[in-house]
Image (tube, rainbow, N blue to C red; front, side, top):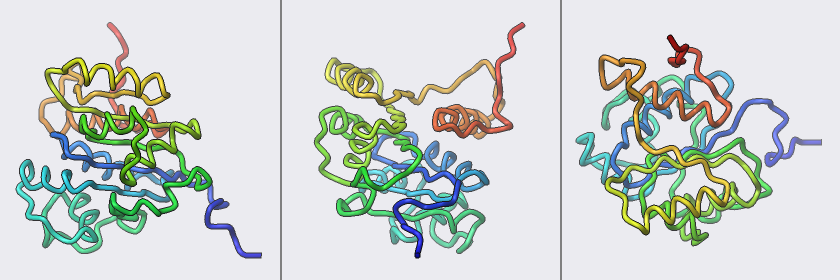
Length: 219
């Protein structure tokens, strides 16, 4: 009897990573590189909103290209023209946020958690109120209703009352709110090290602790 693709027998983790149109898109790329390099991770479902692609252009200087090239670009840390098959690329399935009919839209499709990094306030509001107008919002809604891990990493400042109420609503529904607030106690000497530590901390909430993450030991 053939294996059921909805219930794989492999013990490897299956993680959903969504990038939305908030500042801090490079942190999403760092998280993707860590996931791709992690031998515990078998499959990565990568979702990027149209607004996320615009932020990549504004913050990273990348010209919009084919969505099929996105994973390779993010892994290589370079725009189009980067290596065609960087390590870990075979794990990644790149999806359109408009593909509302994908298996991730159903609670019968198993995975091990979802991370939205960065999470725009528009996406946060939609998730908090169950709007589910695209695959990112629907996949997050599925996580909440199925009691799976959902980590939202919002980036906005200052926060208005609507933002605060939406954050509370998402947390009450079961999401972990992990704002883009880097640590300083590890005394990272470069932005790359600070971003890697942040990404490592957030992946620990998906039960994927990173061996090289800084751990505070006290004095």
